[in-house]
Image (tube, rainbow, N blue to C red; front, side, top):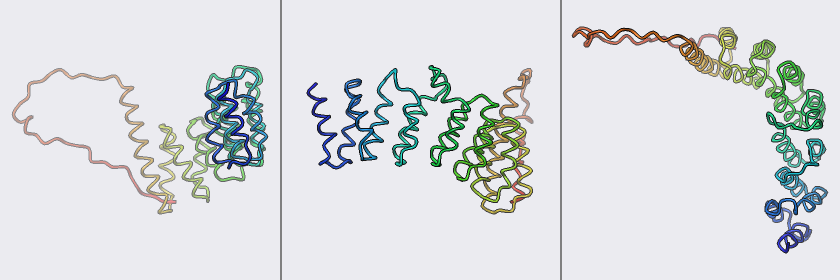
Length: 273
C-alpha cells in the first residue's frame, strides 16, 4: 500500500531525528502484518529509541512464529528502554493461561525464569521476580527466595513483598525475618507485603515487630498496617460467621433514650524498631 511505503521511507530516513520517527512507528499497527518487515528491520537500528518502539509494536502484531524466546533476546540489549519494551511484551505473554506452546512453557518455567535472575541487568532480574510470582507455589517460593539474595535492593524488596503476599509458610517466615533488616527499604517492603495478606500470622508478625521497633520513621507504618490487617481479618471473620437474627422486640421508652455504647478500643502503637 502507498501509505505503508511512505511510512517505511520516513521511519528509515536517518536524516530525521529519532524522536520524530518514534511517533510514526505507532502507526505501523494500522498495517498489521504488512508492517512486520519494517519493525524487524528497526530492531537493528542504531537508535535505541526506535528499537524499543519496534519491539513494543511487534508485541502487538500477532505472529505464530514469535514466542517468548524471540523477545527474550532483547533483554540483553544495552538500552534499558529496549529491555523494558521486551519485558512489557513478555509480561503480556506470561499472563495466566497464555503460555500455549511448549517453548513458552519452557521459558516461563522455574528454570527459564531462574536463568533471568543471572542477568547482569537488575531490571531483567526484577522482571524475573514479577513473572516468577505466577509460578506454582513450590517453584514460586524457591525462585523468590533466591531473589531475596540479589545484590540490588529493588529486586530484593520485590521478592520479599511478593513472598509475603503469597502467604505460604516460607513466604511469611522470610517476610517476618526481613522486618529486622538493617535496610529500611527492605523493612518497608516486608511491612507492605504482610499488610496485603490478611491473616493471623501476618498480624502476629507485625504485632511482635511493633514491640521491638525503635525507628520513628517505621513505627507509624507498622501501626497503619496493623490497623488495616485487623480490619480485614475482623471483616473476614464476621463474613464467615453464621448470622443470628434476633426476634423483633417491642421498643420501650428506656431503650429509645439509652445512650449507645460504642467500642472505644484502638490499635496499639507501642514499640519501635
